[in-house]
Structures are given as structure tokens and as C-alpha cells.
Image (cartoon, rainbow, N blue to C red):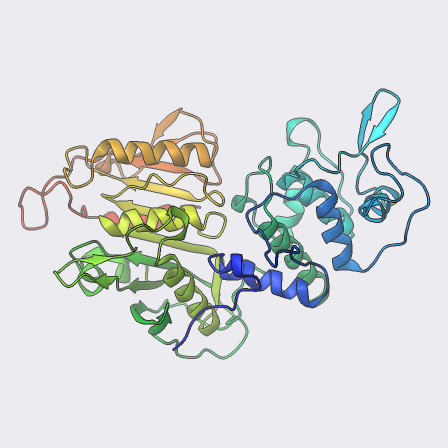
Length: 434
């Protein structure tokens, strides 16, 4: 079966399918468009004026203006109708610079500002907070309405064009269609059997699936996508991971990597760019197929893996940050930085593992600490058998680091690269605690 979304612009071909659908949806409403070069530039940041244009074009056109409403918003500026409408409605106030009141239209907008503008534009009566967390009431409003989960973004980070489109599309669907964006299309309709074979890049790809025992059209269930390593197949890791039992309330998908013809497998092609690894598209297609077939809680999509599968799971969590709720891995790292959004992480690695150098695991840990805005303070957490610690000040997207000393496999052989006993249960408890 073919899988994938037709990208609305050529440069969105590698974007998360949900963002592709959001842009297509807003294009259909006349709310958004690309650039004269025929591209969308999804990763470029949005400025304050551009975001207000998106807000108001999604709600309908605004009236032209006859006079400047801010010192830096002349009446003939393309953005003046949107900025002035926002000022009249109390959505924006601007900045006081001496005797002048300015708007700073060209300044990149951060998530907190964008959320405030959208919340007020769509009619919520929210009183702004005080101090550094002035934005919290607006964030809470989004959480309560299930429009956008607060774990999926960092409030003070600039928002990209594709994520700005996703935010507004969620508001419009919630406002006009009463849709909850955190539920997959399969919620509320009769289940269908998903295809376990998908066409990705012209090639047939397959995965195994364990269905959540709680699954039902009105019962959204979480999803784990679990990746195997370089020398073990998905059938083999399904046996030793232990997720079918430990995560019986989850859908668990076990993708099959591409065979290299020598007993090994891969998840990427040589020369792939870090954020565009070959099989990120495969991950996207699995999530979409299962979400169309069953009722999936899209705020609880997780990735897990061992060895090379851990490296790929960590890469997916970064490239799909803000979409993947959390990752949990054993014996694998990634040096991918500048994630698309935050994502919780459980990193399990034996310091004596020659196949997964501990220095690389520590580097990845530090990257995720920065991405999730954690501090360096730690506290011991379960399971103590894996020597786990959790970093402070990032409770929504915790980073748990487990430099365990288990160095024997289930046969008693020395093997620091092993999948320790109880790992599946520890991972599921980590996911459940998010």
C-alpha cells in the first residue's frame, strides 16, 4: 500500500505529515501561501507581522486602515490592517520607547507571543500572568482545550513557518469543526485493519504490530515505534524487547530496516542529512497508517530502540521534536542538534560498552538537556538497578540518564551492550509518567 502525504510545496517533502496537512488545509482556506519562488521555506522563522496576517486571514479579511496605529506601522504597510486590527481588539499592545509606541513588526515571534495572539484572537478571555511566566495562562488555555500540548514547544523559542501554520490550523479546526488535534483520524469511526506493508520511496517496507488491548474507536491509545539494531531483525527484537507484555495498553510497531545483504540492516543511506535520514519517512508513514486505522493519542507517540535502532530512535525524536513525546533507548546515541522541538528522553548506556562509547551517550545526554532546557542538578530515580538519574527544571520533558553496570546477557555471557532485564518495564513507566 502506498503511504505518504502529497507535500503542498517541494521544500516540505521531508516535513512531518501533520504539518503538510495543516499547510494544505490553510491554503484551501486562502489563509496562507508560499513565496514567489514556489517554495514555503518551512524552517524559516516567522516575524510578528507575518503571524498576525496568518491569524486574521484564517478568521477572515480585516478592514483597511487610514492612519498609523504604531510609530513603526505606517498606514500603507502591507501588514498595517492586521496589526491595527489586533491593537483595536486588545490582542497586542506594543512597546513604549520614550514617547513612541512601536510594534516591532520584523522581530521574530516566539511561541509564547504567538500563543497569546492566537488565544486572544479566537475569543478566550484570559488574564495575563505576571513576571517571567506571563504567558502561562495562555499556555494553560491551550492545554485545557487540547489545542496544543505545552510539552511540545519551548515558550521562548522562535516559531517556524510550518509550526505557525500548525498552530493556527489547530485553532481553526477546534473553533470551526470542534476537532481535537491530539486525536488521530481513526478516533470515533470503525476500526480498519492497517496495511503492514507500506511503499516508501518506491520500495516496499514492512513492520510488525502488537495491538493495544484497550483499543477502541472511543479509547485513544498511545503508540511506541520500536527500532531494531544493525544485526537483529524486527522479529528478533520483538522477542527480547518485552514490549508486547510490558506495554500491552499501547500499540507497538516494529519496523524492519533495509537489509544490507550481509546480515546487517540500516535506517539511513550514506550521505543523508541529519534531519532527513531515509527512514524518518518510514516512521511518519507508520504513524499515519496506524492513526488512520485506529484511535491513537497523537500526544503520546514514543520511540524506542537498541544499538543502531537506538541511534535512529534518538534521531527521530530530535527530527520530530514536538511530535514525538519521548524516546527511550539502550546502547546508542546521536549527535543531532537543533531539534525541531523538545522531547523527553531516557538514555540507557553501559560505560563499559565498546559498541556504544559512553562519551557519545554523554554528548547526546547534554544535547537533550540543552534542547529540553534542563539544569545540571540531578536526583536518583527508578529503576535503581540501572543507576538512573533525572535532570532538574524540565519536568515536562525530563531527561533520565542511566549509566548502568549490567554486563551479562540472559545466558550469563559478558556483554555490556545487552538489553538489561526489566528495561521494557522501565521504559513504559517512563513513558506513562510523562
